[in-house]
Image 1 (cartoon, rainbow, N blue to C red):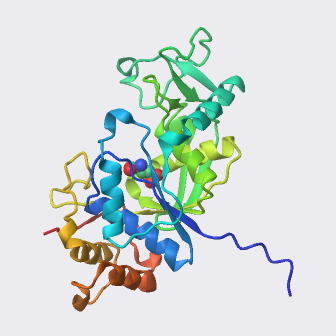
Image 2 (image 1 turned 60 degrees about the vertical axis):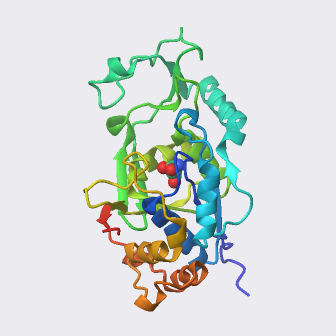
Image 3 (image 1 turned 180 degrees about the horizontal axis):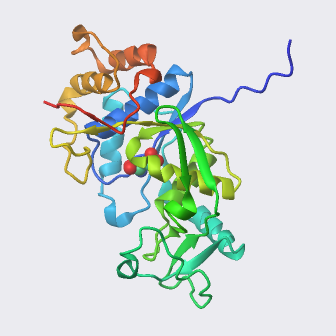
Amino acid sequence: MNDTLPPVVPYIGRFAPSPTGPLHFGSLVSALASFLDAKANQGRWLVRLEDIDPPRTQPGADKKILCALEAHGLHWNDEVLYQSSNLPAYRHIIDTLISDNQAYYCDCSRQMLKNYPVYPGFCVSNDKLTSENAAIRVRVKDEDLVFEDEIQGRQSQQLRKDIGDFVIFRKDGLVAYQLAVAVDDSRQRITKVVRGSDLLDSTFRQVYLQKLLQLNTPGYAHIPVIIGTDGKKLSKQNYAKPLDPKNTSNNLYLALKALKLEPSRDLINAPPSELVQWGVVHWDIGKIPRKLGIEVHLP
Ligand code: GLU
């Protein structure tokens, strides 16, 4: 036996919807891609509900999303994690960053920043501000951040030049998405994040935070987002239709095709469990095109 082999890290994937509305076709494709990649790699697949933005949360959307996942044969492992149950942990991390001088308060208004694509650092040495009515920004270092995306290839960004010190705690008292995701992907020991390419740009901030906090960084694969016939990304914001629960087989059939798999026509009416299992067996991430959007004509 060769005892010099590195230990095999078990695959853990995840789907992390925000409960801002019911599941639509674009989010089904993301959920399916992350599920198929996890299961084709004998992995576990977790669901995390990113419910830390109450003004955007739609009451009952969490349950609707979970029911829709189950109806489409996408069954998760473990208990669903609600980010709202982690608020004290995020707050503790933010306080530590402040006391280590890695983050600072900022009370710049949107109006003040509207002509600056990159945060110009107005509050960087303003030590009169406190948590009352101020956001918190993390200081970014002057270095290149590089990661390898399994679909989109090598990605590189200079955070200081491209983004600047970014918000980890919002002025309205809410934890910023970037921090919560970076912390939870690590706490849940996620080894691979498969999600839509609309989040590619956020990945730099998440990887930066993971490094700063000495947390694990997962691998990433960003699938092209689904673009409707109007040329726009399907999203809750442009009122993409909720999935029809009576049409689960057809939804899955179209989602498999959007992921460049080629299910035969006789699978159109197969039960969801069979379509999903077919997807696991035929999943090939190498077939996903290296582009940010794919147009799908939905019925
Ligand atoms: N909660 C985010 C959304 O629904 C996705 C987060 C992620 O996959 O990292 O857009």
